[in-house]
Length: 138
Ligand SMILES: [Zn+2]
Image 1 (tube, helix red, strand yellow):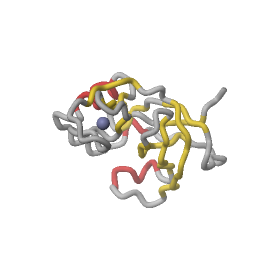
Image 2 (cartoon, protein in one colour; image 1 turned 180 degrees about the vertical axis):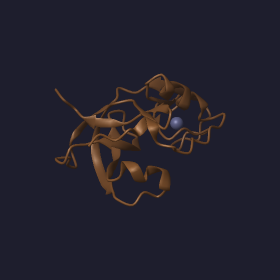
Image 3 (cartoon, protein in one colour; image 1 turned 90 degrees about the vertical axis):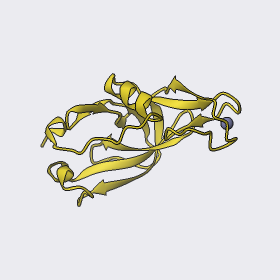
Image 4 (tube, protein in one colour; image 1 turned 135 degrees about the vertical axis):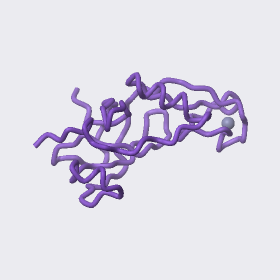
């Protein structure tokens, strides 16, 4: 059964001045993350200060969209009732190629496993395009 993820009545993100570039890029199907202008660390989630060196010189770069599944959970009882039509679905921790880890929706068949190679799969959820991932096909 295919779920109409775009038709879900989901609450929207809380967009701040710090996170706005991330959401604007997501709407275009891109995944951007921050990179520190001083220590060169990649940073995700979006912040005002580098968590490694406290620099405020954080810029934005487009991520490769490649990552590895670090952990996942098959959600049967969503934390928000708007997700119930989609359950069960997979939420996973994706270790991006650039090194930060992000929590994301994973388009998954039954055979998902920790260590799987993943690729960005921008997806319409509740009327907005957001980053999601799927197993790498090549
Ligand atoms: Zn830094």
